[in-house]
Image (cartoon, rainbow, N blue to C red; front, side, top):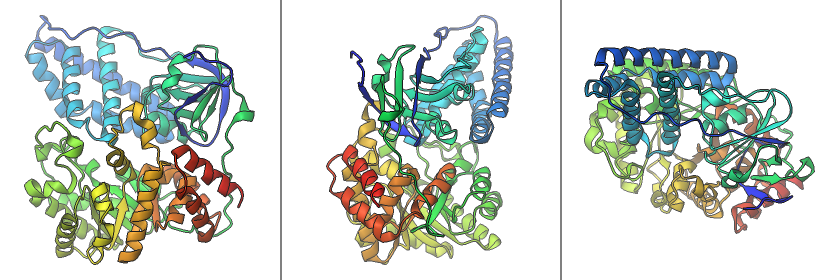
Length: 541
């Protein structure tokens, strides 16, 4: 592709602020040595591996302290992966088979990555783990993986993608980021959003950019403009709250005690998605009910005031929980995961529900429970009957599969509520792997087919007398949250960093105006048209 003045490179925008600056291309790191056997003995290799892991761990501490905020939390999570005992034991097994320390650790991480790689959310975490593996291997090989970035000027960083360790090294000169790969839930996107750095991810055309090129990073327009300036930036809607309360409640997504505590510092009204599987990912043995009650009670007590929607374990061979001993599957996203675990692991699911109930009683919090990966009305009824036989919470299901979305009204009398996971629903609706950067356009939440599916689900909930929420990444887009309210969605749950922005948008208008915007969007024939129509309609209010 020959880039000329005004050439548009399409991608997925992150944030609302645009930036114009000079391209600085971050080239891929030097290749690591190929995996090889060692003749130095297992004791020497094991000791060197321990030293390398300790070095990388200390470096993560340093980067986390320097970065602070959201980045610091990410580095804490990465350290848990890095220092995982099971991962180290797998590495030692390879060392005992004659492999060198670097090869042993790399092979262990590759095995772990293969198990986790099928799920969209966890696949991006696997990319982080692979980055840690490279850093351990680089330390053993004497290769420096530090980033050397300009400290002056207005720099637009361009690269395949950036790891958390990379983003922690961004200098004040970095005002924009463009990645060839990655997605809206990658760490690059999360960090850029939290630091208000203009970013466009999954921008394949960025591979043509060279050092010194002048570009406009235009997140609202989902594009990078070669030779563009700020006058070409797509204008973001400036939401001004005119009401004391948003037209629908805004809740927070959490997965840990730290998340709950952070969410409580926002304006969130409760929790719309508590991902319980994060508590079990490193557990080698099934936790007792007492252990689960203690963890759940602490999180429920710390969460923001309002209902707390707890999702039962969403594990499978793509999100391996060690004590469940899930067999390998060729296509784990379409395999035994979520509520489908009931066939082989009913005892654990029942223990989880009992633990949640005891924590609910102990804390006095309003708790709702829901099951993931529900495909049929019969499955929904099976879960709801089981949950009601155990606890006094409200009971519902996730809507992630097109099959349950098409018969949503048949859940009348079965569920108290449903929650739409737009991340997985998009993946299944468009038969598009969310980890494939070339399919990013299909997974844009402005796709008309997704929006019409959401409208159908909302109408089914109204007809059936149960509430409908959205807890997927799409709800974190303030403009799209307005559309969701207009479609008839009853609540949204968003990432902690977006709670206040989404709440502000939903307090800037009344429900009638939101419906007007949504009705115009429903007539759109493309994702680009849908977004443009929404922005135009909001600008005219």
